[in-house]
Image 1 (spheres, rainbow, N blue to C red):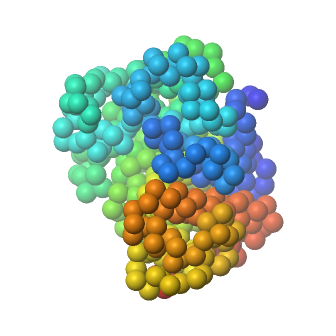
Image 2: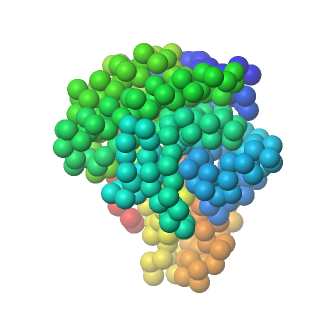
Amino acid sequence: MNKGFKILHKDNQSKARVGLILTPHGAVETPAFAPVASQGTVKALTFAHLEELGAQIILVNSYHLYLRPGIDLIERMGGLHSFISWPKPIISDSGGFQIYSHSPLARISLEGVQFASHLDGQRIFLRPEDVVNFQLRLGTDIMMTLDYFVPYSASFEHHHEAVSITSLWARRSKVEFMKRETQQQLWGICQGGTFSDLRRESLEFLLQLDFDGYALGGLGLGEPKSELIRIINECLNFLPEEKPRYLMGMGYISDILEAVSAGFDFFDCVLPTRNARTGTLFTSQGKIVIKHQKYADDKRPIDENCQCYTCRHFSRAYLRHLFERQEITSAILNTIHNLHFYLDIFRKIRQSIASNSFGFLKASLSEADKEKEE
């Protein structure tokens, strides 16, 4: 299958669209959500679980895989798909968020980034070319360029510096990528915080490099929701219609719905899986914090409208018992439910766009997302 992107249908009342991202390991129906599998696994689940849940694609982190078990080992094992036994598409993040999370210990220069490994303190220096080569060797279907961003509260000057460095790294990444004939895709990342001029400057530079897809990074970091929505809609004016659009790290359903309505196609977030492990479960009526005493003798499933394995077999009372006893099964069953909840919402989003009823679905889901715990 050749790489590319096809638009199949556009909603007649918004900019939402359904499409296909074409990769060597199959097509991804969009709008799509990628469960986060940073280390080559979604925590608490096997890949059999993921396939049963209908996951189309997973997201791994090339920085984490570079540290452990190492790119050389994965390459010797036949590439990442073979190493982890996942036959479907994989998108790999570049490690830009790790630069952000290691700040202020990370030292940024035009050449690359130097920081100490969080595992053993070993000094590491990575250039954007290195990160591209890591991902080429992993064999992931979609690769991200190395980017640099600063906190939402940083000054205009700091955000401008981050855009300049991200742009330079993007150009060098594309040059390195073009040295090899491959069906893998390379997507560029736009930065600029909530500054409209910087976002436009970043996108205009990226568009000249003609990436296979375009992502908005550095959002969901504390900016007001009104600012998030403004930037999403402003950037849409510059993003090419024929390329997939990725809103990185966005997990709140209401934000996802706004982005889909604006024309975004791809999302990832740890929110459903991380919350599952800490006992917060999402339902069509709002969230449930399963540790609460009121669920101790509750015979109902997590969500009476849900058909996941967990809801078909287990009560809230049993799930609370597992969580209180810190049983591994608690994380497994909770994660199955939360990921089913998210992936089912995306199935409904695609169906509603195809039938020109997305506006109705958006209104109903937004209302449920606002609900407090029972």
